[in-house]
Length: 160
Image (cartoon, rainbow, N blue to C red; front, top):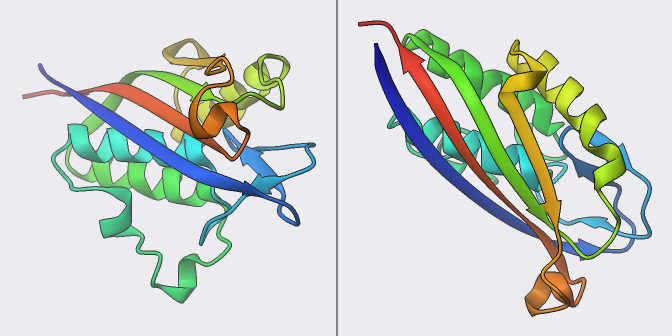
């Protein structure tokens, strides 16, 4: 069995007039994330980690923000397509370990639903998806509530 590890990172600015989508779910908040798609930083970090682990470049390569077809797209669609690309190369998901850095809103109450949604999209077990939420103790752009960042590490496997 061949195993590979990937790491992903994404960040988007918080702005008024946008919905906040994280981990595939809509979270009520006074601001949302700005981006070409729905700007779901958690899903974008997971996509980058998966693609990196399989040596398939990054999310911007496969789903460029210059392509009209991806404007305001639900990031769950991008995640589903990313997993299809990996499966075409013979890979399966081992596990995901992800962290979202945000001062507000409080994310811990939403983590179980995020895990359910992501497991459904990835056709994986909820137990293989770990999501953690943290603050940056009011330091940096996340601490000033200017944006949200997400980090993801994945393990993928391929039978050889």
